[in-house]
Length: 311
Ligand code: 13P
Ligand code: SF4
Image (cartoon, rainbow, N blue to C red; front, side, top):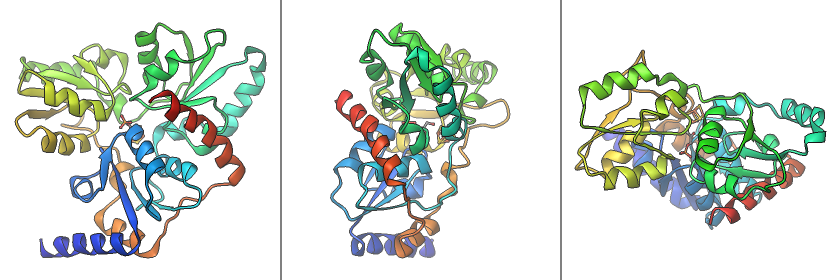
């Protein structure tokens, strides 16, 4: 207990001496969330990264999130506790593959919308970026006379098509965590808590989304849970979300959505970050996110377009 207290104090002292800001995604472990200057979803974190006047951004999340912070802050030092914290969605859409696909289909003149869960090189190939929090808004603003290619999440893409009525061609990628929830696993937990409401992330499959009372980004889950007229709520997303929700809505009974194999779902990439690694990256200012300047510039345009369009 004492060791962990000392570690927290060490982190806070280093944060001050480095003039750093600690940005934390909702899926991080509770001890990291509690040290964050801001805890939120990808959209909120992108705005925070854009607006901060700190010299150093410590990004407690996965690599593409830290890279997003670097894209809008080329002059700042951006570090993340574990450089190997990746994302299965990012891996499912390598930039050379997307580039080849766009070349082969040049006659289609696609308007390319990329979910923010992708590499900077993929962002550089797109017209606009979106997050789960603003995907509907962004798709609604796409030019009506061009076909849309949506990368890399086929489940989020399918949900946005249902919401907007806009047809899109979908890249065949998915989140390995959210596709673990099944119709059977959610039916089973609903049978245990028959009066509970179900809130699910749009990265879940359609079979699971159809069982949900609300489908939304992690940040919108906070508002949904706070305002829900019932006590029991089943939360169908990564387990870190439960810490944030329990803090924000202590009067609610929040139940982790189970998979067929586990009582809850952890993202192994999000969980690579630890307090020790957080302390070390503040101390050493490593590992840093670095980007090729020409890719960064090309990735910045669609990212800034997103921030503008989702105001
Ligand atoms: P949010 O933007 O909704 O927080 O989602 C990020 C993510 O990685 C979901 O798996
Ligand atoms: Fe990527 Fe899924 Fe982990 Fe989110 S939960 S960071 S989409 S692998």
